[in-house]
Amino acid sequence: MRAVWLREFGGPEVLVPGPAPDPVPGLGQVLIEVAYANLTFVETMFRATGFGPFARSLPLIPGNGVGGTITGIGPGVDPGLIGRRVVTSTGGTGGYAERVVVAHDAPLPVPDGLPLDEAVALLADGRTALMLVRAAGLRPGERVLVEAAAGGVGSLLTQLATAAGARVVAAAGGPRKVALLRERGLDVVVDYREPDWPHRVRAASGGVDVVFDGVGGPVARAAFGLLDPGGRLLSFGLAGGAWADVPEETAAARGVTLLRPNATPGELRARTAQALAEGAAGRLRPLIGQRFPLERAADAHAAMQSRATVGKTLLDVH
Image (cartoon, rainbow, N blue to C red; front, side):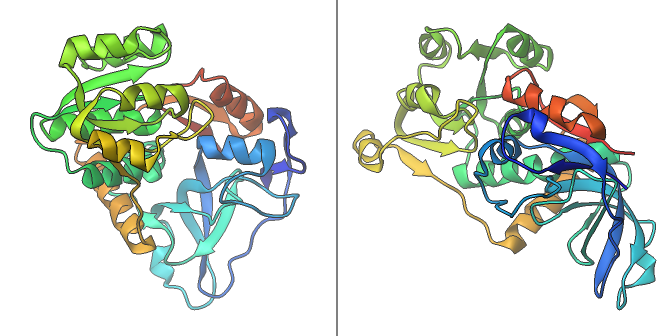
């Protein structure tokens, strides 16, 4: 089968297409013919340095999220699963390939009416956004700042916060992303690459009650300064290269709560299923900004690292 290999850590060019043995489902496993692979920023960091939760010995096939059709089963598995459209995590590796094998109870069925590419776009980002909004305990009328609002998680957070009755301020990096967010119906949008962006937020909202931090670093610190007493800061990304470094004691002195949602595997699965259901109902619309064929995984990583992407980036495998 076709796949993309990582044989050494480094720049995007270390992702090299090449053949791989076809996986064979064993006891309790299913074989999935992959249509789309989901890309996340943490995968670019793993490729570059080995950093992250996917530590494995090289060589390996990267990729942790895919969507496709079950085409084979191992012993002890219900034959009725064959032909089912599903999304699944792979356990950290193997996703940049035409076929994957996972435990029979790992995949989630894709609801009727939800295109498979949108399901893959919601696989990781949808559950993350739902967990963040739940942890924040949003109340109608609250002022919510969403950083990296043109990204995969951020674009979903703006929808969920708006649906919860919050007043959303969206922050994105660069004019193209700002324009995109305005086209998607957001009224208050700022460019966090402009030095006066915090002043623009204050002018628009007077401050904020909740910050969803997808950038980290100096942007996160500036956003923290916009929070009123009783506010909450939740971090979900490090597009700026580092997590928010706001000390607990500093937050406590300001009356701000730092929230870092955790979830059990069961809760993650439930939130993923909820995201798929919301997508099928049209209440959650993932923004798929760019697609690359499987063989161009290196180009996809390069685009993500350069901050040139918007929304979700997918590999088209089929």
